[in-house]
Length: 219
Image (cartoon, rainbow, N blue to C red; front, side, top):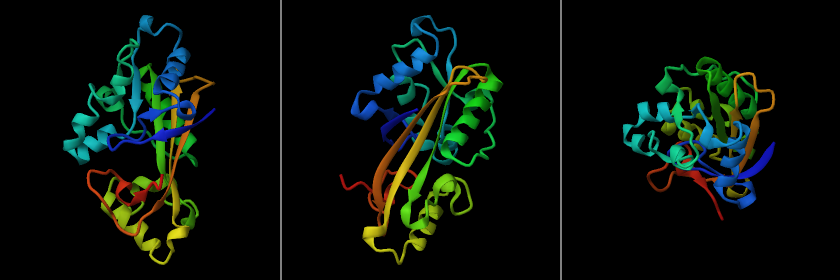
């Protein structure tokens, strides 16, 4: 179990991880090592389960950022692996009924690995706000009721924090990523990352995704 810092992009839930500030190659190599030794001799691809297909449906303008030639495959360009989304393989979304981010990431990875016979990487992520006892948390994507309704989610969040002073609006993004060599893998690689900040009183900037417009990193 690895506690690491995380860098989020507007394209996907988690694309850059590093052991306490080291290069992304460190984490990727750990995944490859778990996949069975020399990555150049690998015969199978890896299913990558994230928000790619949902983003494509909601905002086709982002497709170029998360395409097969996008950032995920760029990370493994020289490793002999190809990352494909579960949607490209006809795998339906898993039922995310876990009670933690780790559980949901494991559910999604095992679901994809079971249906494809491939290794799988999955993540689960959300926004945790201290003044709201951890909400939106696991239901970050559908906080206002409809999955992927970013404007609605932000509106509900700001309404619930309307009377909360700036000093108590502390929050963090959390993302957990899981790698399974196969569906019955009893020792999955699990990485958790946190990004500390606070919730603003109104959206700012442009080009953000999800809660990005109201999340401020003071660093």
